[in-house]
Length: 371
Image 1 (cartoon, rainbow, N blue to C red):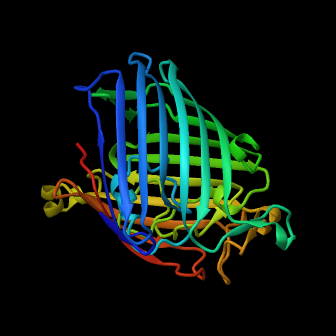
Image 2 (cartoon, rainbow, N blue to C red; image 1 turned 180 degrees about the vertical axis):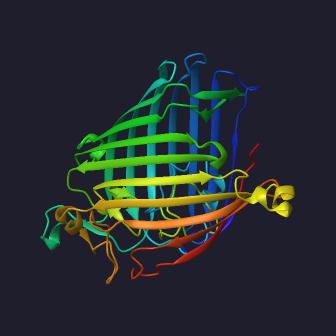
């Protein structure tokens, strides 16, 4: 159950089958209802596991729900607590969507996997939004749009370890080698009324950095470039956080939908000091608390044609968007393993402090279990 200004009270329930039902088929569904907007929301999926040795699956998913511009639930699929928290409060830039997706993936060789997907999506805003089909012509303004995308993804992780249980496969990450992911997305106009043609290319690099007595560092480099003229909900959305929960893959003091880019490069660094510092304090050594550090840096840019196609402009008056000359920057430190599961992070935002609702400092929490 959740509560927000668009749906009012929202209730939802669902199910997912396990291996007692089948070791080759996984089926799941959810059904929800908002008492204020009086709309039914649903999602359903079916997955067929073709090969467990060379992990190969094909899946189909359909959804109809309320989303929020600036939240990418595909990249946040494992962050259940954070996604649940985003359902509460004021839904700035909320929109209704219908999505259909078919996905095929296979590990061709150990540490080398491919994914091909087709995704069809509709966008119906519940906020003040429109875009020009003919830039500059007020009579050409439209609110809704549809997209059809073909996605190709290559993932290289040479010595990656996995745990397979039930019908799940969980990565423990590589020990020495990086994870390199290359994703190409092509927007196909005309299919199902799709309105835009575009190309997106994203490259990410993740590396675990053992540092002996200093603990372990984790580095993530990401870059993306978009070709085509698009309204801002289809650009690179840098995922902010307006919840009290910490998540590794987001920018913790950035507001939802605060920044958009058609090209960007980011650096995210996490340091787990293990017992390097706190073990020198007798009380801390007994409690087994561990110090952490983080840094998030992102450089981005937005072409004038991608800015002017949307009406009204995506940034409130007085707000600045990312530029390649001035990065968004936040630094933090924290303590993990409190009561064996709690983590607390203290984060400072160091740039774009004059933007609307910008926060300079935040205290965030998460629950995690580590050996």
